[in-house]
Image (cartoon, rainbow, N blue to C red; front, side, top):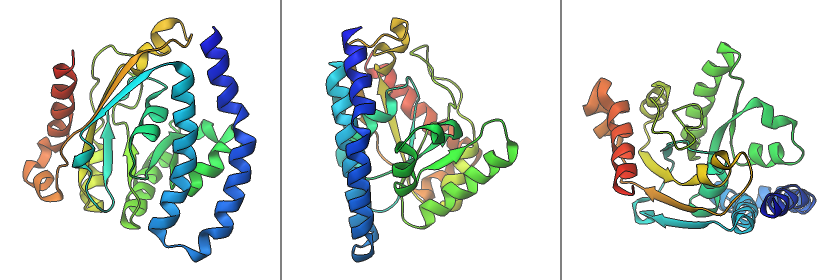
Length: 239
């Protein structure tokens, strides 16, 4: 209970500071390159996410950062729990946006940062929104921004890897960028498996070797399964 209170107090208590910093960052945007601005914007969510994870008392182990390529990539990760995003923001040094539920726009400050991070919002009740999210994501990648996607669609809560929705392969192929698979294990033990009470957990993040556009083309219709199987094998190796 105490860790839950500390974590959520920090989560929302940091927002006024984040709002002030965002205003400062935007004033500097005109004089910066896209890469410089992306790193600047990423620094604040990274700091915020690191603070959240510290207050959960969790231990996050990261491996495979040497696999991160230059340029825009499509990060493809399994989705175990609500803390996947804070874990990845605090662990992955390469700036990225991500596809998020439309409901997040109801929060204060956070959506403003997400817009600057080049996140894409999805209304899962609207088929047109789903189509638009795909085209918007392709556009962000074409512009040089990296994007994270959870192709399972919903959290597995540690109950095994779900099937991947194939739409992410259209994004990767049309954008012509590498796919970087990520395997996360342990985030569901922070909250979902504790009746939504926050407890410390050991979390392991594995950044796997990227798949090039040429490799994805060669895999054809089996490309989505290839990405999933690599994540599945990585998860099996840490059990």
